[in-house]
Figure 1 (cartoon, rainbow, N blue to C red):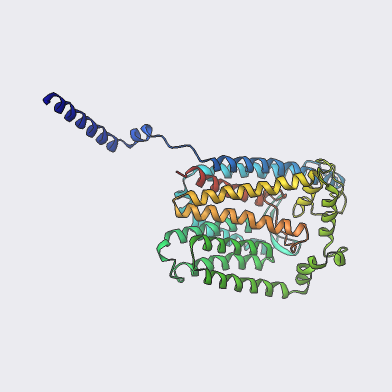
Figure 2: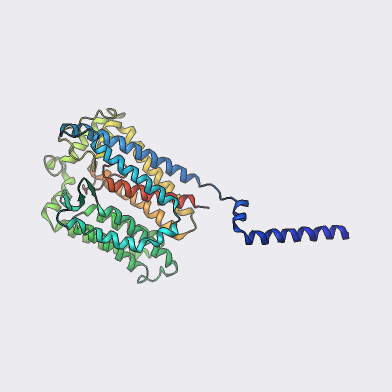
Length: 399
């Protein structure tokens, strides 16, 4: 009996010694209990993002090579530029995915100031550029970018950070709803000052999505969103030209020679695609002046014509899979900032896709928003991939 008691005491002392050693040397404890692998959603999103990025490059090449050749440029001109931005975007994705989120949170305030000041650059003579009535581009030699794309991501992170820190104060609108709406007013107001209604709508959608996920009072969120919609309608009606463009989708046939020309030609392209499409590079409507913006706002029409209904279902299904996996990640994580950020990024991609596809198909007004991953536009692709990197960062840290 004494022998067994001595043996038990010895084992207990050995266990206490091991526990003390692990407390003094946390690295040993980490080695003894390795981190679990990322969830399935991480790999699903990684596959969709990779496929979309590569397919987007192929569609940009298909939509621009012949038109660039007819202009006397290299057929690879637009593709090379998009490929360069895709490479930068992959670097941004990797950094966003690997760098701990706490470090990104430290950069939110300076990034908000810098991105807000950058929104004033398009108004500076010599570097500001206007496209389709919106003065929202900055051109420095052969390099151009759209500051509003960067501001979207920064505003989203600022909203998520504030609501995460004030989790226990959601009942106080002055501490939560007010400051978040101020971020939204800042972002949307700067976009409207540039004449970019599409980006302003996305900015507002980001703010309200984050508030909804955070658990803000629905009555106040609904009232604020209604007020924002009224302001958007006032902005549209303040200019006869803008109002005519915004309402042209209601009667596409009557405006097919002017205001709805792009949408009408896009509908023809989609109808010609049929079930299987004409094949990559074989679409006819991207040639000449049928679809002047085939590589950017209306690239979905090129996808429908060349890949057919099967390609359309695949692309829209891919966005749905990406959104579903992102929602699962947002619900699974125990970190409030991670949850709000992941949900906001998913809402961003979904809203922008709906607005773009709705405009191309004639179901909604054309606002000039790009189709994520697919439309030619360096700053849009770079920010989209960086945001997806943050989404993957959240996914790989779900335990």
